[in-house]
Length: 434
Ligand SMILES: Nc1ncnc2c1ncn2[C@@H]1O[C@H](COP(=O)(O)OP(=O)(O)OP(=O)(O)O)[C@@H](O)[C@H]1O
Ligand SMILES: [Mg+2]
Image 1 (cartoon, rainbow, N blue to C red):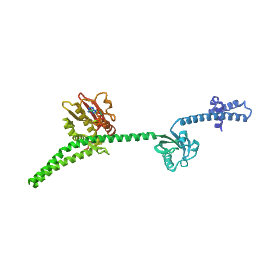
Image 2 (tube, rainbow, N blue to C red; image 1 turned 90 degrees about the horizontal axis):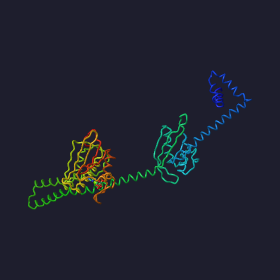
Image 3 (cartoon, protein in one colour; image 1 turned 30 degrees about the vertical axis):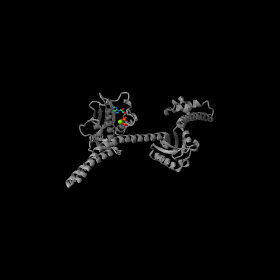
Image 4 (cartoon, helix red, strand yellow; image 1 turned 90 degrees about the vertical axis):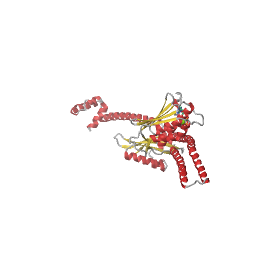
């Protein structure tokens, strides 16, 4: 009772009351009451005064709450994201205009209703499942969900839901914030499709070059097979066809056929898109790629020098890596063929650093003019005549090394040409080829 009285007196008399709140000074406090209230002739006046003060206070408090509420309301209304609140019975206790507009309803149509009363079953089940998770785990969640808006359009919402607590820290419901990310989704899809087209075009461009190489590499064995068959015919005509003759000639023919079949295998491996990262030998990969390009390089009398101190193993996409080396060697060859240095030369050097391997491919083809240097990794940037270059070789090379293999692809001009450097993390265990 005293407590209540104390409280009320404090409200009425503020500071004066402070000095008498101490228990030992209770007498003083009573005196103060007496003094303070001597103007009031009866109890009802005192009560009236109390009520007046309390109601003033209450009005102030309500004003404050309303201010807070208005502020919260204008904040939530100014946000384009959809905002909603639910209580522990899964019923809506509020939402902003964006949320109501999204479903073509007014805010009041949501109040007190649950998802099953508002949406089709398939949506309501999903919403309920996530709300239950929040109430059980008392954890925030975020998910993407396709929802139909009131016009019937499919909209992808990124929805985050958080548990709501009262001032005593007790769970009282949840708040959800949903953002329309449909545009971003379709942009991303478009980008992915473009990426796939670029990858495909790059493969096709390389394939065209490869077919030229296959033709080169098969010309020799096909000639040899032709000669062997002719020889066989002659031997039969002249009665020389005995067992040992047939054996010699068939082993010669098989040798050519094996060579041709290996060439095909090499090419097939080269173009098979890798699905999984593997540990592979850098030496083997570079050597194989050089062999695939051998004929073209030899025809242009280019000296190709490879120096690798010891075998290094890399964890990544083996065939994609070969494609990068293939592109760098092809570019070096093209530069050399158009600049015609006295001693045409391509050098491939591998340095074994502490945690990485540095592979440099350099040439003496005259270099890249500094003004175009910043553009060479852009898609479709080429200085080659139409049909000779598509301008995606280096773009793809950079993507493969930097996005797929966590490495770096750098370029700089040297005194007589260009040097491309690939930096790749080394597979620590240095395991043998899988
Ligand atoms: N070794 C090099 N020496 C001189 N210029 C080079 C060299 N490598 C690349 N370039 C320049 O960079 C450009 C882009 O190279 P990129 O490999 O991306 O395309 P491309 O070779 O023109 O066409 P493709 O798509 O057929 O490879 C080339 O057109 C060329 O101007
Ligand atoms: Mg190229």
